[in-house]
Image 1 (cartoon, rainbow, N blue to C red):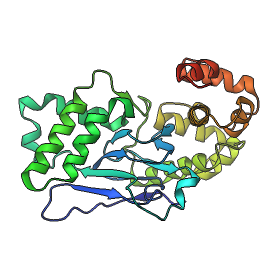
Image 2 (image 1 turned 90 degrees about the horizontal axis):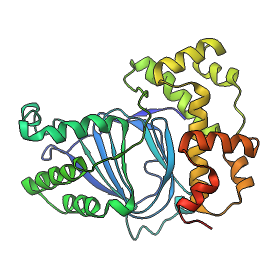
Image 3 (image 1 turned 120 degrees about the vertical axis):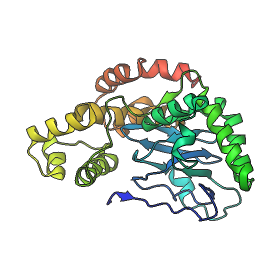
Image 4 (image 1 turned 180 degrees about the horizontal axis):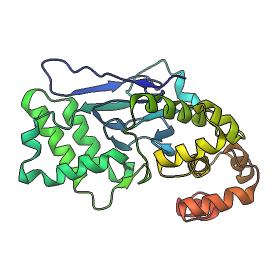
Length: 289
């Protein structure tokens, strides 16, 4: 799967774009773009990949993705072949950080906005329970025209900027500002891991994707992501295990193997390190029996 740099074209008469996605698989490719992306999900569930973060998503969730931050949403298989399209799966807004001009963004009253656009580089998640007002504002943006549409987008971003402790998705060391050649190399690595993290991955195997020896690859990956490859792989697997626990369709033994861990003690150790909870505590925290 070749990574895609999407060039999203705005209509000349509009300063930003807003659309509704009627198909579940429209965003199921690893991609990035210069515009920020604000998306709210109306129906469907699946796995969300943002930078080096993986977790489940569902109806009502709102996500703000920064410029050039790689991401995609993989819907569960039961939604992929949905041909009825009675209701949209998501509403998506794409906008440049300076869509109102550089001088506008530097106004002293827009300090919160500048801070929001900065932390959006790591991706911001607002779960459904806390996102009702924001989702309504996004709907209002879609249903507006002219200057009112701009005002409502600013209103939406203002609400997000006032969230006391937003959930940031990528790790603090994650970097996506590589040269174009490095972008392609890193995207090839990410694509390989996304498609194979459920299986055993040998270091030599993924190093060959980057065209390096194992030792050179380890140094390269740590320099560009701020974490070791094995830590990155563990994050992927634990994130997927969290999704399976919330789905509540498999027992813990099957979740262990389905997530790519070869034994439960390995799952337990990594799960506790990354989430701060054991898998059992995680289930209780989300009221799953």
